Image (cartoon, rainbow, N blue to C red; front, side, top):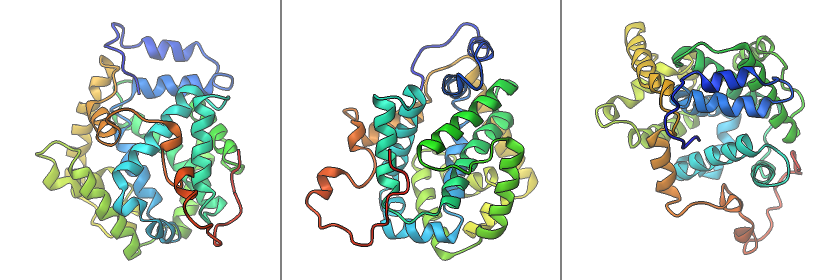
Length: 303
């Protein structure tokens, strides 16, 4: 999350990206890409979450944890901060490695299939690239595509997810097959979506809040919308939402600071700042006072 003031040359970050190697400097490219498309990428946070709660076998796990239904504000902020630390610092010892370890400690508590982990990684990658193309203030470069794909692949490997497709085309094919087999409606999907929409209604401008459901469904894949049990808005309404999203994201050209809504959301959970070891669930200090869970599966993604 960039906090710097406006850059005089709107293309300065793009030019820095083009001077880097997509394979050797994937993290740096992805970090700069995020700084140059901060508002354009905001919809991906929502659509990525909706994709996660669209396969019933995932929502069965998520409902049991209660995290996304009753503590979704903290869960959303923690997810953003953990990803930010890895994106900023990488996976070498230090804050980036600490954030990776924290994420893996959480994930190993649940019997999530390797395919579902892969699907989340694929959706995250494709979602970022799609949002930048759809809403971004400038054209996406091939350097950015290659860099983002490589960084997300490296992150997956550090989670012991080894089957992530290596190209955008292969990712699209994987996602289409996964959606066809796993994404379908269940009441649990709708239950988690309703909880998420209640949170989102507190984050969007006041005039959007009454229509937050229709607006968010306009940004999502129609297959996801159906799996959540909502109606897909008509083409004219979707175009108005997309146009408004592009207009808001146009500020990315001259304002490289983190969007205020993101800063306010983080401050609402961590007004005095945060420690990486306190992000997420299953904190060691809590587990020290709890009996061991005999149903916990073997770790899937040790660091």
